[in-house]
Amino acid sequence: MNIRKFSHSMRWKLVLIYCLLVFIATTIIGVLIMSRLEAYYMDSTKKNLTDTLQRGTLISSLKTYEQLSEHEEEIQSNVETWSKTIQEEIFVIDDNFMIIASNNANQGKSAVGLLETPIIMNALAKGEISESYGSIVRKNTSIPVMNMAFPIGEGQQITGVIYIRADMTSVYDTINQSKQIFVQAMIVGLVITVILGTLIARSITTPINDVTEKAEKMAQGDFSQEVSVKANDEIGRLADMFNLLRTQLDTTLFEMSSEKNKMETILRHMADGLIAVNLEGQIIHANSAALQMLRVTQEEAEQEGYNTVIRQFYGELSLENLMVRCQEGELSDVFETGGNTYATRYDWFKDEDGNDVGIIILIQDITQRQKLENMQMDFVANVSHELKTPLTTIKSYTETLLDGCVEDPETMGEFLEIIDNEADRMNRLVKDLLQLSRLDNCQEILNRKEGNLISLLKSAVKKVELTAANKDQHLNCLFNEEERIPVDMDKDRVEQVILNVISNAIKYTGEGGRIDIDALKQDRNAIITVTDNGIGIPEAEKSRVFERFFRVDKARSRAMGGTGLGLAISKQIVESHQGTIELESREHKGTKVIITLPLSLKRGIRNIE
Image (cartoon, rainbow, N blue to C red):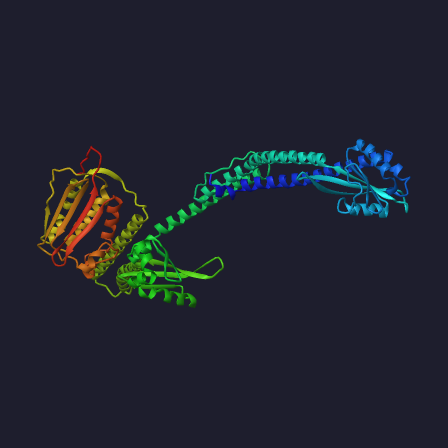
């Protein structure tokens, strides 16, 4: 384990605290015990000396002498006798501080400088037993001693002092041994404390370390971590709260991730372009539609910045212009660029404190919508016009007849025939509109059965042969009449398409013209082509030929009784059969219509005759 890491760990700190507490506690206890033990031994020694002296005859015999110096021999004899009892140094000192008697051959000397003078003076002056502690040196060895001074006499009759110097070596040896034992016990206690403290600290820090490690893994995105602590204390509650937090955080992040994915999916599949730009002109987000409109990649958008990218698209949408417009409350715009029409909406987006931090721009390509709106308006106008023309004709001729202005039966018959033709024209128009509406709303029920497309073409050609012959036109069937091309189809609807295409070719091809009709299999499709050498269609008009009421030559179409809905209906019918209808044309050269229908996957083929 890394020593530096361990020294900063909670386990080390706990063990250190335990050791310090034990050390301080045992030190205090040791000091108290040692001081009490020392005091006990001192008091015991003092008491023993006092009791021994008071029980003996030495002090009582000395009290009988008024002048101790006059009885030196007697006193010396008593001292030597009594010293055998206590084995301590004894001095008898008179009131002049002279040693009268002693068991260590110091009699006749002055006590000053030899003995503890202060306690002698205190005993002489106050008549109290005095003691002091010190040491003496013998043979270069310091010996601890206790000095006691006992007054001889009472009150004002104190004639001297009995001075006892007790050797305390044994006492201090006992105390030092006790101190050594205590220090050894303290060391053992500290070792035990370290061991127990480590175990206790480990029981505390292990779950904390577990929580920490798993929290680090959670910080790295792994939310499968779970702490298992079997305890009812604070650590156990911490583990429970950690697990609860993990569960809630995991749930919250899952919900956030789901919402983020949902939002990203919505933004990614939006048909409208969405751009978020901050006030520094950096593109924060741009969805796929926006990048497609701007014709840049995500990396280019982020590197070049908003103004550089938008300038290539539409310069009026620069960040500065948008900021001014947002401040003025102009939050939308419509513009044209690159041949398309776009609608934009923009507004500030704010931070948590409500401060403006950027602008959200929504760009909608409304080209198709405008085109549809224009087509709708044209459709309404065309329907109105197509209905108005026959209605006006019918009303005019009807009013003329009602006014009685026409009496000639022949003229009246002509008028009625015109009214009948216009009524038929209106009926065809309404019928075509209803069919187109049903096809638009998928309400046209197709009776699809497998049939032979060649037989259907032959039948359709027969129905228009006379019309073509009247214009001296040549209908050429290029397909193999013996071939079988199976197609799942509604016979009546597909025949309607073929008749409409061939009829248009006849209408817009001059007398003596040529019309080729062909059919063949190609991959999994049946291909029908109708080619003429008629007037053709201008390049600018080709994209509109399948629009409703569109006519290349409006005057000729109306004169021929057309409603302008035939090709629109044909396209809807073909597409409802999962096919396509396309047109190729050159003005004054002719037109080619290509119809593609999927072949039937069934093996059996029923001929349509």
